[in-house]
Image 1 (cartoon, helix red, strand yellow):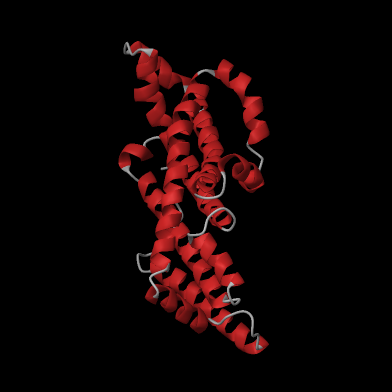
Image 2 (image 1 turned 90 degrees about the vertical axis):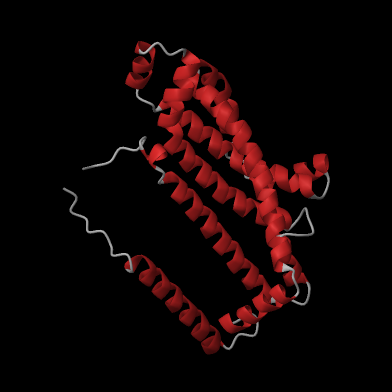
Length: 260
């Protein structure tokens, strides 16, 4: 029997809202107490956000950032998932390729910015390439690990039912590894959302990252800078929430082990 008491439904909303309210109060009184002229107050940020909405700038920048993340992350998933399943299914091949992966994986995507600009120029393509790099390796590693951790008894059961190796991979191994793959996809999406902001500060002239750096350079509008930062955080929270909801689908959750 689980001794942990689940929180009531209202507590799931009350405590996060209370924490956000306390943070806003701390922010407001810190600005008042220090009398700073640089860092904006919550009211100034709210006015700046309203100004961005009135100028119809914010929605366009959000759309550009989300489009780049969708392209880079989607390409990373399309390539990384099949490749990760293949490497996990063939351990000998994984031993050959793994040293190269472990050399490239720790390199920060930000370090690739000069290389991306040299080969791809300035614009959309280097930004998408950096997002692809940031998401590819977490997805690849999660897929390889997910397939490798599937119990051998699952494969033996598939063979006993007369399934071919490809059928076992598609109908047994992949569903069993799917929860871990989804975790890798969720983490990769979070990293991709971080990288798009950095890439847009350098390689493109639109998006939320560009809005941050442009607001800083054009009159030192720190109210717009902080407003863009809050929007970036809220969108990141929404993306993570969407993936967490996906992990709760019954057909996906069977791969997890639960305690009774």
